[in-house]
Length: 382
Image 1 (cartoon, rainbow, N blue to C red):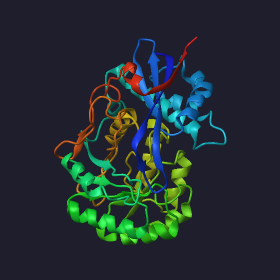
Image 2: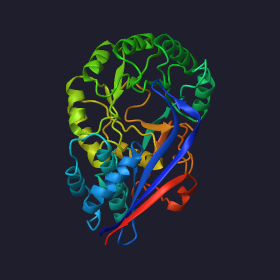
Image 3: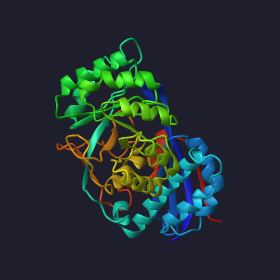
């Protein structure tokens, strides 16, 4: 079954209100959705949420000639062929383009056989995953955390049993808001925080110590992603696990961070690290260090459903949470491209079911993307 067409859909939306973190206020979110079409009409979807425009150019110029006309049943072979196109930049837009293509190839290969991606890759270890809310986000103005109590209460009513707010305004204020949040939610709700690369070593360590009484599961991305020595210093000083990996693309990058003893929780993003093929290599590396690994996901329904399929394949780890890892991250901000086919909230037990339908587990007609479409292109087998 040959791949006969590659189609790109640039989609995006304005964020109202802006989503604040320790580094920036996000006012616009753009993504590239890739659709592969086989000669029998079967389709597969992939996503690039970071550097979508550069990744689009890389797909057109370098990856399309390798994939068009090839068998969709061989994603592992095509993954390595695509890796061969990378030059000096082995962690940037080229790797993100490969990630989206690999995701789509696995979706297509599984749909063609009428099975889920998890089954294609050997069979799921679980039928559902504990979900954690990715939010609330910092607000603009003089009271950046003022809305957190009401927003957290709303998340609890949506059955979330773990919540990851953004912090990073200042260590003292971070400590105060997280201690108040622990008092609000009680001891049975998992809490973690995301600093989004916003601190240097000293403030990150102070922040971790001031939040200690909140009993956090992890502190995510306290520093810039290339600061291996800084991460080691924070990990040695912090009273809880340090999490990260979403900004790392190559297997070698993960090797270097793990060898340095930086992370207690590993979070590759399938839209950055090489799709299913890349993630599985990183997960094997994490196994060697006996570390929990779970997908970072903050994009459209494509990456979210892919993360569910990948999470179903990961071994269980205990991390001090009410439920064992891996968790699935759920973007709880207004995101029409995530909720395109319906809300993605956990059930009463705090988990989300892993779809058993073919491929990633959803059917999406491209016409549904029209309200958020900014550009599209198509390359066909000559």
